[in-house]
Image (cartoon, rainbow, N blue to C red; front, side, top):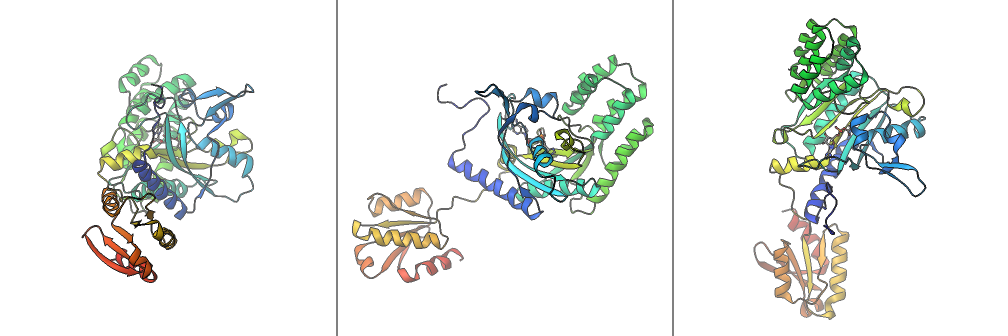
Length: 429
Ligand code: HAM
């Protein structure tokens, strides 16, 4: 117990860590190419600020604690709220749209299971200051691109609109707590609990039927017709028109067949106002790799006027799991050359050779203890290092080294002056 990490946390040993860093770098690369700039916010903040706009589900999951001065703090459970705080308080003068991304750890006190930790990493994007279907579509497009660029196959997006749910709640005139319960049951797909709740609520039959229908409205954009036939509500119509407009913009992107409508997506966080979406791959069908949507009123909760915004976050842990399930082959570790010297006399030449190869861009290990050639070659073999440079007394005198190609077992002499060029030629073969 003493030396275990707390429940829901993970150590990443070098091999896994290298894979994670690669995933993060690929996300960073995609976001940057789309014109988004990185932002970093503290991992802990004032509880009262972090809870704004998020709702009970997230608030209950927060790791909250008092500091030594009695101030109530919490570890951030997600990064959209902190980004909005920064935009509202420090970035008012930036010209819009503001395009931001973040990559970092988040914390939720949840029941750990595969793909669900208490400390997990997110890579997210926030597009602030534009309320057009083009902006909604762009964010969904970067989600697909980002997931594909880390190597995932068969990425699918389920797209809904929380405006539809909110319009039905308005029509029904039900209490906030009843609405929250309905949303939770729809979001989690608890259909029995949803049915039970609808039975006890006194509502028009058509509205009951509409709530009942939401989790089943999946497929092409035409599924929204069923709802329009059932209820007459200007707000429902407006929400569906907005959804149609977003789908129309998405038709211009090369993702035909990857996006489906799912009006059962209502999300577990409060701040969403319109489009909402989640990303999946078939190998991890039950857990979303990422999710997001439009939140046009969150920024004003930190002061000032409403600023429209949309974004999403991807769970890096789940992406890693999904890549493993898809048998993705991560590139093998990078060390390409091991430098061995036979006696202390050749140490300085070995150091200089290593330094100049590293400066030329090759990842190189220098032997740090007297191993002898045989042990050195065994070591290179174990680590799958493809080339070993051996520097002995005779070679050093002639300003030469022996290069052993570990894959074919051959050796040749190369002058120090030609060594960098030699490796450039070898490694581009
Ligand atoms: P979220 O749906 O709560 O949204 O989280 C986004 C993603 O983070 C999930 O799809 C999942 O992959 C990952 N995730 C969430 N909780 C855990 C966990 N306990 N363990 C592992 N992975 C987890 C948000 O966080 C919003 N801030 C997204 C957003 C950005 N909306 C607008 N902008």
